[in-house]
Amino acid sequence: MRKKSLKTLVFLVFLSLAFYTVLFFYKKKSTATFSSKKSYGTDKAFIWAIKETVQVQQAKKPEALEASQEKIEIPAPAKQILERCPDTPPDLVGPLYVEFTVERTLDEVRKEMNFLKEGGRYKPPDCIAQQKVALIIPFRNRYDHLRHWLYYLHPILKRQQVDYTVYIINQDGEGVFNRAKLMNVGYAEAMKQYDYDCFVFSDIDLIPLDDRNLYRCFESPRHLAVAMDKFNFNMPYDTFFGGVSSLSRDQYLKINGFPNTYWGWGGEDDDIHERIKSRGMTISRPDLATGKYKMIRHQRDLHNEANPNNPFKLRLASLNMNADGINSLRYTVKAIVKDVLYTFITVDIEAPQS
Ligand code: UDP
Ligand code: MN
Image (cartoon, rainbow, N blue to C red; front, side, top):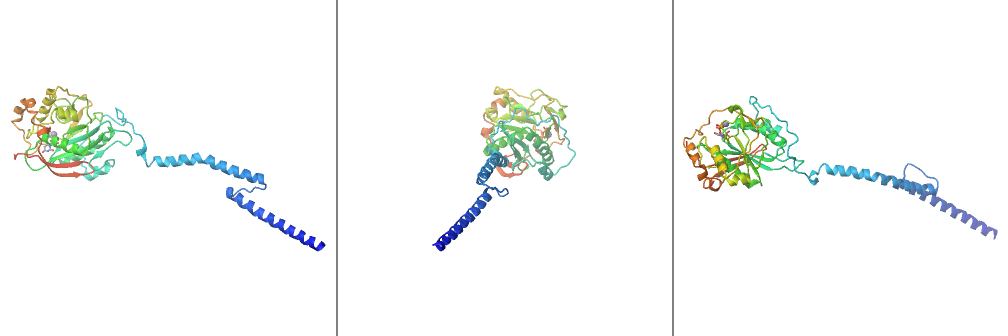
């Protein structure tokens, strides 16, 4: 009997030893799951440890969330809701220093204009541009002037927060030059590419001397080149509309675009002025200080001689405008090349031989 109770006692001692051993290892493992550094002696402390660790994790949560939101915001600005760009662009600098003695290659100009997209396109990244503007440049064989124009105008247009593309409309062949018809081609080709609401027509040799002279459209057709150096920074005559001008799509269509029949130099800008006047529109202009321009000096080009018939045509401007314009435009596109600095469109405009 004593032997039996001794056996039972030994068994019980063994059982309780086994129980405490299992309990000890279980506690140690659970604590390690929540806190690897601190060790807690009692059950109460063990529960605290769990609470504390969970609280620390919760407290950290907002910080972690903020960090991840920041990371999302930088690479995905498209999710930002953009506002309309301000009426007065904030980065304008006013009077500009312009000189034509430094020679630059197109490649050098390209390197500087790292903000452009193919085709000579730009759009302000942080606001919605007020207008979509096509810049139309009538062109033939003026590559020196082209480099200067691109070098100066792209940064100005960027500062002006314009959504724009530069179109160089290159007359194919050696026939008589026709500035106004090339500008019509520019309008027609630009409209095939994007929903422009404003058109700025510029000679290749005119650089503005003040970036507050905005390349955009106004209530009335706008004449921008009001004070060229070659005219002593003044208007050569009151109705002058040459060099650089802008018309909204509506204004342009109201006058049936420009005449196609002014071959050679002279008269087409006065014809456009007549068209605008005869449709009851006025001309808007910057003041003479803001509207200063520097012209790159040049000889009269080959195949662009003054046409003695043009002054006579001018008298019939308002009569001819309904039949001669964007509604009668005929041309054939020979090539469209998209450079990062411009869209270059070579076009056959059925020019007579000179
Ligand atoms: N133009 C051109 N190649 C020519 C003739 C004219 O590119 O052979 C373009 C160029 O944009 C130029 C504009 O037509 O600035 C007006 O011609 P020009 O400069 O001869 O006129 P003006 O200096 O008398 O205003
Ligand atoms: Mn010129």
